Image (cartoon, rainbow, N blue to C red; front, side, top):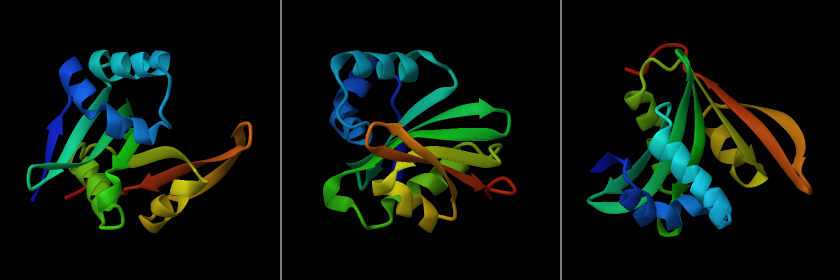
Length: 147
């Protein structure tokens, strides 16, 4: 059974950092500090640990952009459980957590583009945002609140 737990303390952030770091390419200490402030202090941002049978399987962070749209900031599944549909479960879970959100966006790279496309997101090429790294903006119009 998949359960969600909001990470809302520095201790919780630290306990889940290794998995979150996978989603952000192992940033330096300054970037880690900025992410901590964002998730712990910004009321529009939320970070969740996702567990299956009590075992940590993923983390997902998101931001409410406005009254009807959200942005997936980070999503990561433990390496041993990839390919089992947990990422899809997490995206659907976001829709349950924020039923008012009618569209979701995520910025990603070549490695995760197929994941978002398989879930029905549409992509737009953002070009080479970082030297040698192509990025894409993926958008999912939910159409109506998740039921």
